[in-house]
Image 1 (tube, rainbow, N blue to C red):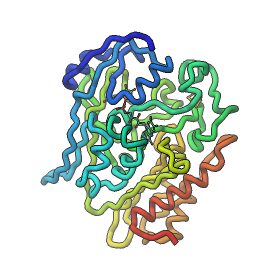
Image 2 (cartoon, rainbow, N blue to C red):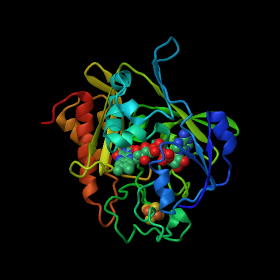
Image 3 (cartoon, rainbow, N blue to C red):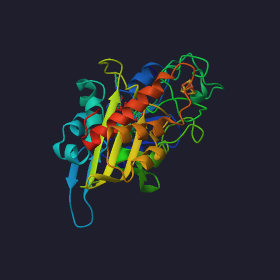
Image 4 (cartoon, helix red, strand yellow):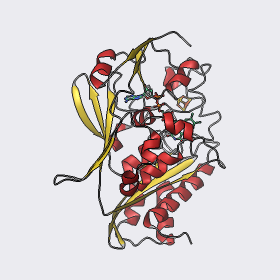
Amino acid sequence: MKAFAYVNAANATEALASLVPDRGKVLPLAGGQDLLGLMKDYILQPERLVNVKGLPATIAVSSGPAADLAVIGAAAKLIDVAEHAALGKAFPALVQAAAEVGTPQIRNVGTVGGNLCQRPRCWYFRNEEFYCLKKGGAQCFAVDGENQFHAIFGDGPCHIVHPSSLAVPLIAHEARIHVVGPSGERDVPAAAFFVMPDQKIYGETVLEPNDLVTEVRIPIRSDVKSATYEVRYKQSPDWPIAFASVALVMGGATVRSARVVMGAVAPVPWRSEAAEKVLAGKTITDAVAMQAAEAAVAGAKPMSGNGYKVQVARTAVKRAILKAAGVAQA
Ligand SMILES: Cc1cc2nc3c(=O)[nH]c(=O)nc-3n(C[C@H](O)[C@H](O)[C@H](O)COP(=O)(O)OP(=O)(O)OC[C@H]3O[C@@H](n4cnc5c(N)ncnc54)[C@H](O)[C@@H]3O)c2cc1C
Ligand code: SF4
């Protein structure tokens, strides 16, 4: 690993003062599970790391006259999200996703900010021998190569799937990501936080190199039912093959509106408005869930080796809908 300088920032102000606008020169370090691996593999070679474990790490769930809101600090651990009783009541889709990340060891070290900002797992990206589009090269090696875990939506030019399990339920629950940077603070809707490769090839979020995620804010609604359903390879702690988070806004037994978001199928969490339209105004049954799941994958364009993911994603969407509604699978 290339030698680097290290700054131990006590808070966001100190961390921001140590970051610079140049891409890759100085990087925030949270739990380090993703970043240190990339450095050991010579994919990233920063000159300085800024420890951001001093960012807010608390989880607050509050109700008030203005709004019912949950605020999760960027330095909160995944295990704290997975085991938080009030979060579990308000956002089942989120805690179910957090509880499935990796292994207990990974959840004990990984942070919310690091999880949202982790880099893609594409094996060509992670191998220093492959100078692909994302590293400034001229081609995507997944197109004619090993692409069994790559995207089935999005049309490239880079075919990664976004690796964050938290991103998907956060979009279903209409969360906002709080960002601080040199020009101030801003709240970015989770749905707009992740960007497609044709908009930005060297990164996966709207963040500039000297921006930091400090909090995630999620509105609490008593009329929402939600769930996440993941499909993994056997009992593997590795990333899911495909998964879905669904949030249903209920009016009695009828769905008033829905958010259906798929994970591990595209370079960003992939929302399906077609599936949401199928669910609106309906009572959830096995047949309605299947119809929505069909709509969710209708536009999929698998690559040479990942056609099987269409069926996996369809199943994940159907089961997430049934799980959210509390309806047993037929
Ligand atoms: C075997 C294995 C299985 C895994 N399975 C899953 C899975 O199923 N689902 C899943 O979601 N993840 C999975 N992970 C990934 C793991 O959850 C992430 O690596 C971890 O969440 C990253 O968090 P971290 O705090 O260690 O981040 P770091 O490695 O410290 O940082 C990750 C990136 O985020 C940036 N960063 C960190 N904090 C901030 C901040 N506040 N603002 C701006 N940028 C920041 C860093 O600069 C770096 O680029 C798995 C990991 C392993 C090793
Ligand atoms: S999918 Fe993206 S990261 Fe992977 S080889 Fe292609 S361009 Fe590189």
